[in-house]
Image (cartoon, rainbow, N blue to C red; front, side, top):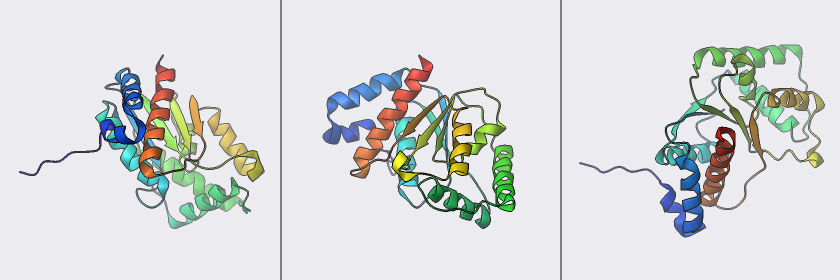
Length: 202
């Protein structure tokens, strides 16, 4: 019978050292058994999906009951979210009332089809962030931004204002882009996420 395994934190020891691995384990020990849901906009393509794919398995190996959920939508919806994504980084956008209605309708539908009974919700990037406006405040929400939102980008005022409004409902946020190989990036995310969750718990 085939033997299956997933990546565990010890697999990163050669890259980050035993001290870092132990520090992550010590933080994760406080969180064992907690239920965590990750939201993003796609299961494949791009660095965010690749990171979450590894991260959710890694968090489960550390004892956190971690899920990965993806928002569903129409081609029009994802065309709008792409433009909003670019607008936050300085791109132009024509956000008509019809486009707003399409976007808000799809977000609402996703809030209806996703029942959340978790200890933490982690939202990756702006696309799923508006979900927070459709749920009661029963658990902490953490926003993990993988975009470069530095002031030099001068994001679109209207889109930035909407994100800021939603962020005010979040309990914690991690912003900034990652560089380097995938293994190091995954370790950075695991360490930062667990650190942030630990701060919320304690």
